[in-house]
Length: 420
Image (cartoon, rainbow, N blue to C red; front, side):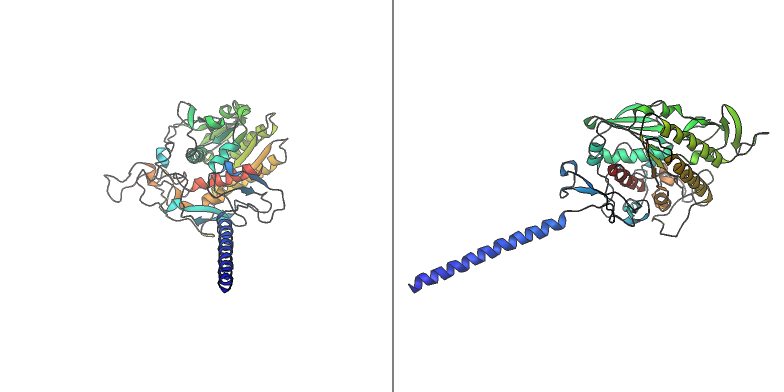
């Protein structure tokens, strides 16, 4: 009998040990898995309703949902650049649509720290751009980027990220390969870039390298037919302009000369580039907001350059290797004038949208803080090869290396679109 009681006692102790081990395993599983599921919240203080995207649309292995909240008081364009050891979503070897002028690493740029930064808003979190989510959202839709070479730079960045999920098929290009269109067949999504540096009709007399043989003839009251003719096909557009308005130009309204900028023509009034920029934006925004075809429009603000000790054609360069910190730099007068014009005309247009959606894509501050992200001399392949150490070469301190800072603009882009 004593032996049986001893066996029962041992059996009870064994059961207790098994139960304890099971409970410990359950607790560990709950604790561990709850700690690795990331939660993305765009607005920490927003009381607006959220919507979620199912995990089937997302590539991150441990992510079950991404929650996008109305931005509320959070300004996603007000923030800072922070180090990001994960690096870019693509490289110059995994994307074949990078133009050679922006392919900085292939062209021999010796440093790569500039690709390990990410934009972080001050008052909210910003999820990383997800190409699967974007393509799912854009299924059966069309999007166009309308503007100058900065717009083309942005499209190339977007293409590089999307190509990690689905390869784009180029279906159109113009004679000079400045306007292009791509298709993503699996999603029936069409992406276009339309070369329209003034947004309105213009006759331009210069070669591909920017050397002019005459003043631009700019019709400020006529939206550019290059994008107007296809406007009815688009669901989303992003418009941008700016630096081209600094060029010598003669201005027309009603097919009559009304003035110029830096033309030095007798009896033609000097009106200044800001007059033309304002009128061109008024013409463009008026067409978009009054059109019967309602398009979701993003209006991108000016992109400052970072030339030091000269301009692009007078020996200016950009050789910084880290971002500016808060208060370390400010907009130049020209960029401030452009930005003021943009904000004034945008606010006027927002009050007269007539059913259209018009959003400000305010990337000026993001761009201002990144003097390190430009090709500089590495716009050309190994520019110093075979030259003396102090050789001077042309620098590009306006456009962005790919990969580079402009990739973060896509984080902002998808955030704005998904909230709608």
